[in-house]
Image 1: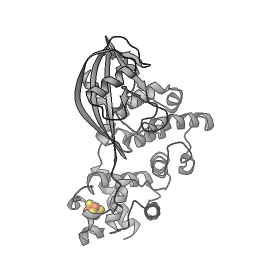
Image 2: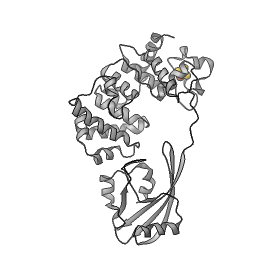
Image 3: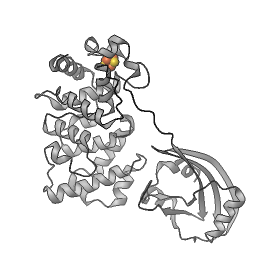
Length: 343
Ligand code: SF4
């Protein structure tokens, strides 16, 4: 299997089969970078609206560098993994201060910016600047391990580095960006995860060892994951007239610096929940139980008990906001979305 054998049918397929996605109509490194960061851990369909909205509000790297934290957090609200947007902002400031507002045009320099690893540097450098470098994400790893019937565990960084080198040797000088996007597109739409790939529609099936040997569906091999840690929480929706109680999470750790409803770090029965309200110095009327909710993070699962209470005064050391303020000015992570719906 030579590089040419793979490149020609793959690029021809991509030309006709690629999805029409907004970030594929530009060579602007800023726009490509924003799309790549949004697409980490998030589905294409979910990203579309966010991408348009983010770029309308912050159309270039200067605008992002000058934006205040509540503005870019609000634009990211619901996408999760908020360190991504904080790193975007830090990197934008660096591009403006250290590179005169022009994106560095090599993957080696891009990698020095906050939040940009091998994959993102490769994607931006190859698509925006035509650098001959690979961009190996989960989709690409799946395609190539199947193509080569490679059963080494891709959870091993050494294996990933070796596969990246193998893919690097395939990237054509003439069309590195299209090649990288084509491999990713093949992984996203044809050589799909969780079940049988659509080999009958694949432009590389005549070369594919995983297809020939019938091993593709079991690849790539990943080491078994540790089970997620379960954390119990009790979330309080506290109203005082038109106002709702909020507080900021500590800067370090999960959802660092984000807003949340007041909460206790354990599951509280109604009597203990009343005790917690009293400890915060709140006088409340009837305590209503809410439907429990669950939120799954990468390594942690929150199991949340919820209560609603009307308070006599907006005290307790919390920030109290009206509902329109909550919608416009505060970013509430999607972990609390089901409780927010109650309001
Ligand atoms: S032939 Fe099947 S397994 Fe092989 S790359 Fe194509 S879709 Fe994936």
